[in-house]
Image 1 (tube, rainbow, N blue to C red):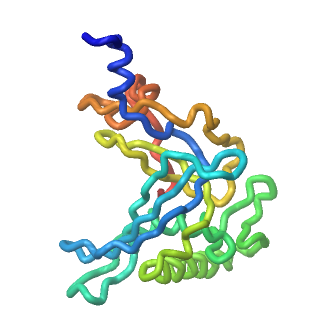
Image 2: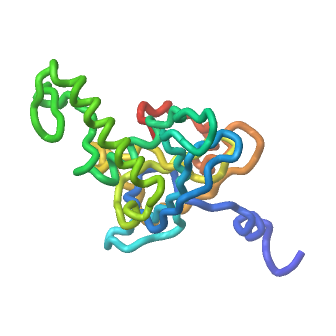
Length: 220
């Protein structure tokens, strides 16, 4: 063996990526992708950079591939894919003024809120439909021209799926949820497991416990 130890070999061979947890991201690149050849689904690719405390962009970046819940009129027989739960939260987080959240009950006042105002229960369905349409209109506009997403900022949680050591962005939000903290900058990087055992694709700290985690109630 050369002038290095087994430990150095191990560290050099590790795949390292962002640790699991919440980060603030900025979109640094937005690309229109060709439709899926088999399904005809319309797609886009967005690259997000984690932001440091001083607002500068950190590394590594994360690529997020979006399948739009839109009909491809140029693909015979195509129907909109059921991806609203994955895509709507992204535009609601990145464009909060244009794409309001669905109505929700305030935990403290117990009142139903929409766009910062109290609404009656009888108005909820109409408000939900309005919120959905505003988000879908934004997605419809981004599909041919995704550039307006560049420069937008939002919070999202880095997660990993079993069998995949590339990060996924989920739980998108315009404001950090109460009680949630960002991953400290000095803890951003973590070793990612690439074995075929349970815990595949998870940072070593989580894979050691079997990768157990609760299923998110969020769409992305």
